[in-house]
Every structure is written in structure tokens, then in C-alpha cells.
Length: 540
Image 1 (cartoon, helix red, strand yellow):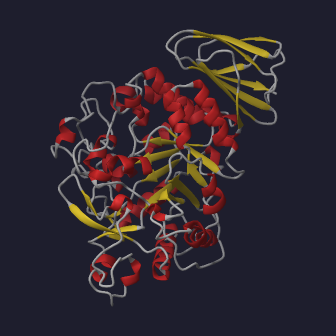
Image 2: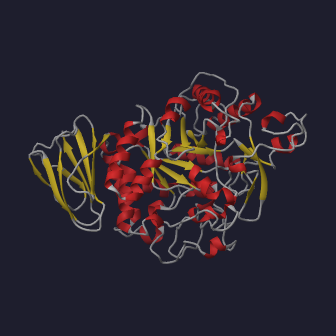
Image 3: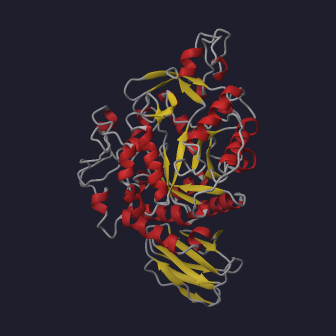
């Protein structure tokens, strides 16, 4: 979330999630839940407060998400990534008051456990977002140790004076953060070198992996998202070598509890391909930020270059999380100015180009949202436009609408939610041309044809600068994806010489797209309408 923090540091807000290490316990792994191969996963990234309200208080909650699991399964996703659930004075639940307690507005710990069990009962996975490298002045560690050097929590935080009255500032010198509702809280850096902190965090993460300690894991998370992961926390030179001193020991110890646990790191530097996080940080997945930017550019040369680099640099057994949007960036629908054809191209690349796809809630509807630096002053409200209520209804009102920010400020006055604009589940579910049904179609296509999730990626060269083409191939068959990135009809010829697949006069089968391709020797030609998407399959 580095870029979002750079945008918003004057706003005094940014969710920054870190997983801390602890008492590096070991144990014998027990029986694991059956799960699909990692690359078969499709993650749905939920900003819980904005998803579905079960009790009429306009706050999205755990019971609400449980009520809508049918919707998610009908969409075709197989895993859910939740933003933080623990107590915080901030609406986004980053910067904790208490790591061990569920936010009352989301429900109870029992509601959480019921949700996890129901997700697993359906054969789905759940990932938890955590941020334990910062606390607010409301947290016990801060309250007890501030101004009290003799506190048992004195070494839990980084103080710059002997009296414990000056906490080490976070990135950009920030010592406090502001909320959309006028809340202002001091923030302190947690001392990740502290053995006490490491012990605490090991126990905390272990608890969420196996709440009742029975080693069955049906009530525990399947993985954690490590946001803003760094080797040198906030580039301050105060907590360095964290990959070796903190992250790897923690991840290694937690894997001894559950060898199937998955760790997903968000690189602090969005310009990183994540190689060092795989090699030194010990994580299983990183976010494909370069690829997200390339997809949004609709530039063929950039797409080819970045896709080749992204997948070639990913070690065997590791994965890239491929995404179009998240809670810290502009909605893809706004990036492409609500162009339905471009939205479908984005969805195609999100789901078919490789890695593990992640869909941000509402992305499948084409929801809009542009936050930004100082848009609404020094407040975390600047990101509310990217985190608005999921649009269930044509009227953008009704049971379940999580309008927690209604009438709270200018972000509501400029809301992206517009009645009768074609962007809602109600409006799209019965429209065969809708974005929602397109996502369902491509997800189903991906599930039915394993080469589309398990095949190796290779860019395919062609003779048209406006047409992007690539291959997903396995030993005995391949999928060919051809996309016209322009608003004009394009003629394209693909020569398969030098690629992993040879056409040799074979006519490929059309999996998606109303375009007939012509095959001659080892070339494939097609006339593509504007923004056309063509998916083919061929036996090798």
C-alpha cells in the first residue's frame, strides 16, 4: 500500500498490515482440509463494512457475509480475503485497539467462527488481513507504557526518549492519524525485535489458524495477508533485516502448526516484482502490481513485457496475485470510464493471464470509485469512494445495503452510487450482456478448462500493435487468448514459430468469442471487431 500512503500521508491514513513473529513454537501437523491446487483459486477481496448488513444498522457484518455466500459461489469464487476485523477506532479497522477482539459492529467472535466454518463447509477458503506493527493510543501496550518506563509493555513499542513520552514516528514522520468522523489518535510503531512482541504475535496468529487448538483447522483461517511488508520497516533504519530476524522465523514456525497455511505479502514497493519476498521473506504469494498497471494501460508492448517478467521471475511453487483493483486504488470501472468492453477485457486478463486471480468486491459489477490525496482534507475519508457500499439493488437502497457513511460528509454528497445506472446485482443478474454475467462466464470457462488456470504463460507475437495475444499451455494442449485492445476493427496474424505450441494446420476450437480464425500452416489469422475477445483451445 505504499502508493496509497504516499497519496494520503497528509490525510493521516493508510491501512498498513504486518504480521508479527512470536514464540517460535513447533508441533506435529495434523490432518489437513482437502483443497484445490493454488492456481485454481479465485479470491474475492471483501471490504466487510461495505458488503452486506444483516441487522439494519447499515454496517456490513459477518452475518451479512455469511448470508451472501450463495452469491459468491454463484459468481464462482473459491476464497475470501477479508480486511481487518479486530477492534479499532477507525472504520477500516487498521491501527488496532485490541487485536484479540472482533469489532462489535461486525458481530461477535462466535459470528466469526460460524462464518469460517460455513466457508469451509462449502469447500472455500478464507484469508485474514492483519496489521500488528502499529497500535493506537487506545491499545493496552500504549496506555500502560506511555510515560511509564517501568511498564511490562515498555519494550513492546519504540520510544525515542527514556521517559517513554515520545514514540518513534511511522512513515513520513506521522505520529497521529485522522478519521472521517473527526477521530484523531496517536499511533506508535511496535518493536518487532522484542521477544515479548514476537511471543504475543506467534500466539495471536496461531490462535486464528486453530481457535480451539484441535489441529483440524476447520475453524481457522487458510492464510494471512501481509500488507506493506518490509525488510526495513518504514525505511527508517530502526527495524532492519526483518526478513531474516522476523518474517522467516514467524512463517516457519506457523507452518509447523499447519503446513498448508498460505502467506500473501503486499510489497511495500509497488514497483517490485516481489522476488526478494519469495527468496528472503519466505512468503507464498505476492501481488502483481506491475501487471495491474499494465492491464490498465491497454498497451500491448507493456502488457507483453510485464507479463513475461512477472511470470518468469516467479519461482516454482509460488504464485502472483493478479488483480485489477483493491481497497487502496482507483476502481477499474473509473479507470476505463465505465466502458463495458474495456471492463470485460480487464476481467479476461484478470482471470485468464495466469497466477491467482483476485476480484475486489463490486468489481464484477463495474462499481466506480476514485479516492485520492487530500480530496477531503486530512482524513481517511479520502479512500471512502473506493470502499463504498456494495450495490445490491437498482435503487441503491434496501435491506442489506451497508451505507455506514451515509450523510457523513462530502464523500457521501459525491457518492458513486446512482440509482438506475445499470450497476447493481439486481440490474445485471438477468442481463446476458452484463459485466456480472460476463465474469460468471469467464470464471466457469476457467474452471472447465484446466489449461486456463494451470497452463504455463507465454506471450504470442503477432503483426498488430493493437492486438495482445498469449498462450497458456500444458503438455498435450493449449489455450490461445487474442484481444483487440482498440475501438477499431483489427486484422491480425499470429505466427507460432518459436512458441511452445505449433498449429500445423489444426483448427482450434472456439471457447469464447464470436470470431472465426483462419489457420494456414503454422499461422492463425483473424479479423477482430473493436475490443473483441477470442479464446481458443487446441491439442498439441
